[in-house]
Image 1 (cartoon, rainbow, N blue to C red):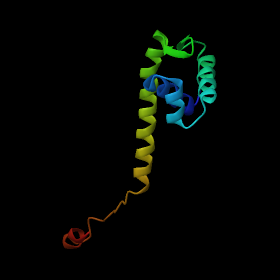
Image 2 (image 1 turned 30 degrees about the horizontal axis):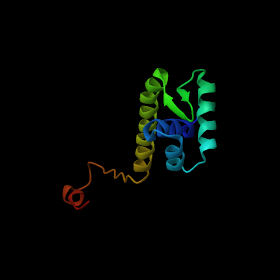
Image 3 (image 1 turned 90 degrees about the horizontal axis):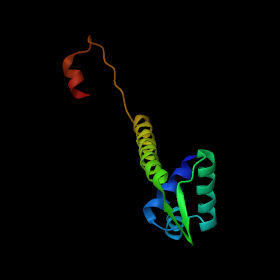
Image 4 (image 1 turned 180 degrees about the horizontal axis):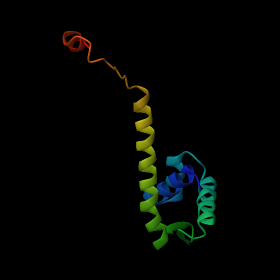
Length: 105
């Protein structure tokens, strides 16, 4: 399972149709369907009921949707925190330094 599959899965549920989800994710519909099928194979469960030309999340899909959203959210937070830590400036001063100099910093 990879992040792309999770994004495709969440997009499909939230967009409601394969066409809309594929467009949103900038991939072809067959590419989206293939990604979802690989995810289901890796999890060894079906997440969608296939109905005619559409797909509707089943009970397992609805449960997994919540987990997938949290995973993606946590990943975004981790990336943001790592990016933020790159730009932090840490200034260490000795207690021997005059206090009026510290105020200038």
